[in-house]
Amino acid sequence: MSTTQRVIAVNRLLAGLPGSDRRRFLARCESVDLEFAEVLYRTGAPLGHVYFPTTSFISLIMPVDETASLEVGLVGNEGMFGSSLALGVEVSPVRAVVQGGGTALRMGAAPFRRELARSPALHRVIDRYLYVHLSQLAQTAACTRFHLVEARLARWLLMTQDRAHSDSFHVTQEFLALMLGVRRVGVTKAASSLLRRNLIHYSRGNVKVVDRRGLKGASCGCYKADCDSYDRILGSPGPNQGLPGRSGGGTKRKGPVARALANADATAVSPAT
Image (cartoon, rainbow, N blue to C red):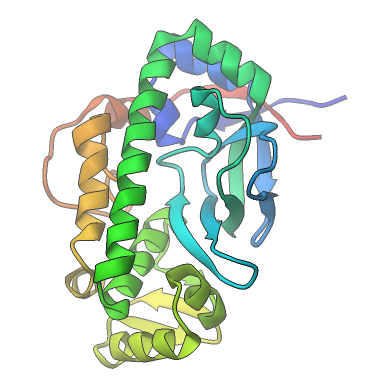
């Protein structure tokens, strides 16, 4: 028989819900540990659960053919995986792979649909998140087509740093080549340029962001556009704001998500058994 543990609601999407809706939703979630490189879903697989990362983050990968794939998004504690269920689509459109190990809140597909029907506030939040997510997919498509590999790499490193909540994280050049849809030699050249400029340190798959401001300068405008979309559509800071040691600039108002995060209360969540 499972026991319960007390956890803080640190998923920013759920933190934006009214208190009663948030507490009811969290009471129906279970806390799970996600391991690095774990495949949560493959393209076309039935969605049995939705995931709301707290300290983990998930890479969304679109297979191009039998040998090539391209990362089209990252989901950390600013969002969720499985939002297509809100559209009545019960299969995964992408391969979901854990890029950063840690914890997440998980709920079964059927309970999630019931909560959507019961809570207009949850439905509004998910609808807005879907819009943000779709706009970012379009931004990624344009970025992949028009921007240089070095700028795209800088953007990806910033996105990963935001969701890892750390200046250091692990990623191999082979994985970066897969994520950016380029040959490994292209990643090596771009990473070497960032190294020479002392923006990052890289050794045996371990990356450390040394100069975040400089890395933002090296990235394309798509990074700022991604972060701004959260503020404009969801009324909450982007993934790089409101977190320890992060300052994304821009608005300083304290929106509903920031207030909810500041006042987040412990809620009983059942761990996976």
